[in-house]
Image 1 (cartoon, rainbow, N blue to C red):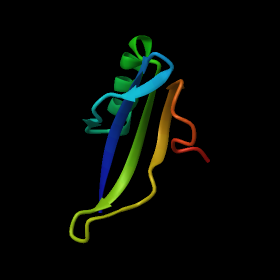
Image 2 (image 1 turned 180 degrees about the vertical axis):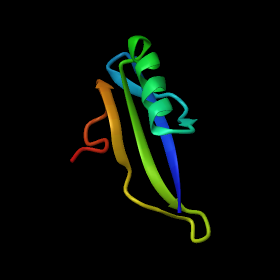
Image 3 (image 1 turned 90 degrees about the vertical axis):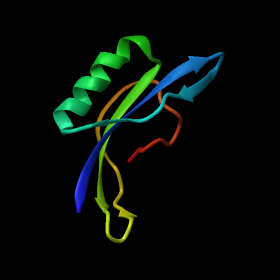
Image 4 (image 1 turned 90 degrees about the horizontal axis):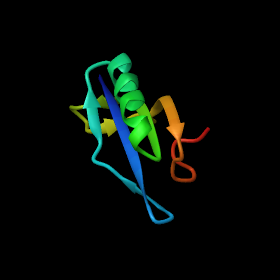
Length: 78
């Protein structure tokens, strides 16, 4: 299994949140740093990790590393 570190940012378009392209990071710390850097210019940002089994193309549940600002309802809550 490999761990992927991802950052998803959202812009506000009218009253709707629109997702930016997902960005990959090499470590959890770099994902959180990217999220913090994007936060001032975005409505919301989430950094998360996910275990991936490349051989079987299976993905574990994402684990939230950092949430900042407004995110779509239900996005990785819990």
